[in-house]
Length: 154
Image (cartoon, rainbow, N blue to C red; front, side, top):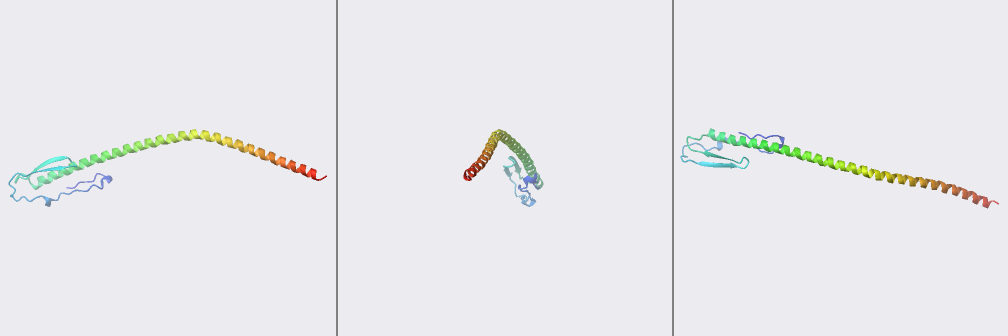
């Protein structure tokens, strides 16, 4: 009897084995009705095993242990399914949040792009004026230089 892992995500879950040697020998000395309650928090199931001589054999105990293991495996499969659904839900929410942030950034870029474009145009206009003033200054210097040389030569 072995618990099987559900998927690669469930590899951390140990495999359980119920060795036959762990069952008490049926030597006939247990004449009283001995009832053991087993409550496994993983399965939340309650089973009563009666170990009255003649009524319960090792095979019956093994079958009941296998039933517990099977129920545990079923619950693990359900847990794995729930985890997969939860993961998918988180991925969808993350994708939605990313899309919202991306759209906000694009809108902000468009808004800022207009402002930046206006500022760049103003900058180029100022640079053009500076170029024109530098050319005018250069012409004035040349004219002043010629006037100075004319005044000095007489």
